[in-house]
Amino acid sequence: MQPITRRLTFLAASLLFALLLVVLIATAPKHPVALIRVVDASGRPLVGAIVLPEGLRTKPGPYASGWYGWRTGQNGVPNPPVTTDKDGYARVPYPKYVFERIETGTLCLSVNHPDFVPDRPERIVATAPPAGAPWRVRLEDLWNRIRHKAFLARPQPVVLQKGAILIVSVRPDPAISRNARLFAQVSGLASDDTNFWIRPEPGVIVTRRLAAGRHTVRAIQLDSDGCACFSEATPITAVSGQTHELVVALKRGVTVRGQLDGTVPRPVKNGRVVAHVWPRGSNPQDTPPQWHAWAAVHEDGSFAVGSLPEGDLEIVALCDGFVSTNGPGQFQMRYPQKHSLGTNDISITIGMEPTARLEVRVTDDKGHPLKIEDHPLLIPAASGRQSGLERR
Image (cartoon, rainbow, N blue to C red; front, side, top):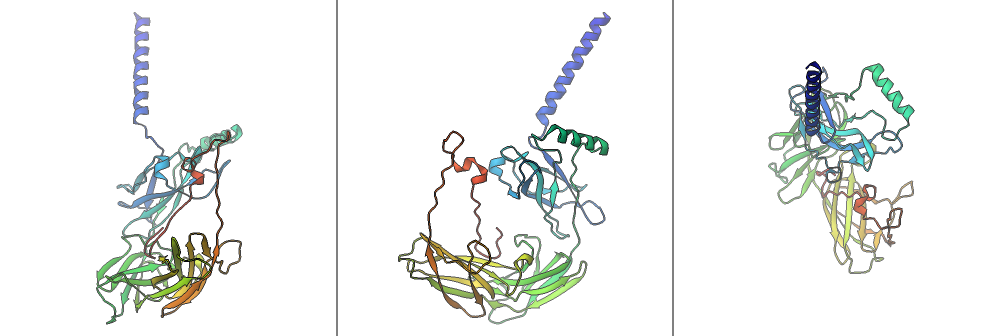
């Protein structure tokens, strides 16, 4: 009886183990999950922080490259915003592969909390060598994990900082409606964060979340007819925990009118002009407030781009068969043409030149044609925005 009992016990244990294994496999996450913790400067967990996955980077290894957008349709992992729990944790599913069999190594995130400075951190989520790495590299990685007692990759916490308070108010002007909606641009800050500013009264906009350091600030007011008014771009130095007040005057934006030169035969087909305005004398590396707009080119070659701020104007034009001539620049690339915008409308003529046409045929190793959507590295990136208040 004893051997039979042992056999039955072993069989029952084996069945229980198999059942447990099936349950674990069935309930395991479909994709890897990063446990992102958000804390304040003292290490206290922050409840209610919004963590948004924005991009991916590959692991270091045979293939390493830059930032990749979160292509939900291709990697099959959605990226909705995730809110941190009472312990400051947010569970963020992510794709095992950035594309093909190139593994994900880093998550690029946007983290927001209504009482703290917003941040866009990156966190390493996979430290093991990529698939196909030499055995020596894998053994070294295993030994390091045993030695440091770290078998699980734990991303560093995201630490949010308390910000400065900035109050921007507009000087009354009979020519400009005080009830029109007021916005503000801050250097280095994405303008689509709807929680960044509060509007306690008409003509006033306030934030408690301005990062410490030097900034350039510009107020913008949009009338009901769509016209924009701008203040000057003003430098300030913010100090965390202190209140800064900025009183500004608004001026109506100017219009750039013009035409494509006679190189382009009329009627012009599918014409567009794209304008970008920087604060005068600013350094693009400092990400100052910028304004971006575009307009259609009429068949007679004329165009008008309205509601632009003062500053350094860069403009390009495209239509069927033609592109604007190259502007000033130091490297072998296409540059925009440049003009100076003051407080008055200007009229310009854009020099144009004929374009060539490039046709590309992509095949596999057997010469069979490939659809471009089947190969993520060949998908052209396309983005656009109609005003300086919209982010890419």
